[in-house]
Image 1 (cartoon, rainbow, N blue to C red):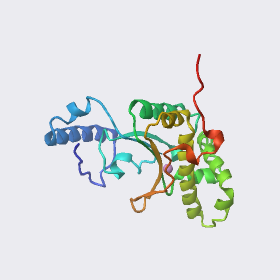
Image 2: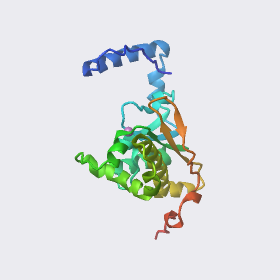
Image 3: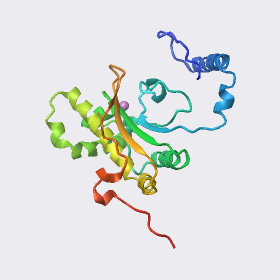
Image 4: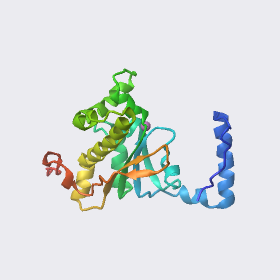
Length: 225
Ligand code: CO
């Protein structure tokens, strides 16, 4: 296990401080476990892929009490899963077919600024094109969302729906469809983290086969040659 160091809350974060922190972490980790880096550098076999928000307050390892080597991670603004994202497709393909993860977790968080921005009518620049994918989630669930008058509750429900749609979007990829068709064990989960309590809520939208998908999304590899 790598060392976990105490850091004073009032200590300013500077880039020099990061390098110094790194030296302290290496020293403390080696003191605890001299073989730590030799062992970890030999390879990775994480059983989990995490697709989460870039928000600095939602680091996958810390909030799940796990270590380097435990979770393969992709983070973007508002944990959007969209099929034209080459980064997402590459990470998913590598995680599923090479690392052979058995769980993919799409994890959002309540109070997500990206989701709140997508619910607004303001322009924020280039990011609007990314957040527009979340507006599509709104369009799918407009009736329910329009019935929520409290703005905070509306954003939080939207966060949950964005995660649920993210789970479905993962399952719709040929990567996952082919994995399931090959009889491999693979579950896709939807979670939401609370910045206010620190707890993660499982939304109960887990997919382990394409039963939940409309038939149009169920695809098979065409025979080649
Ligand atoms: Co966020």
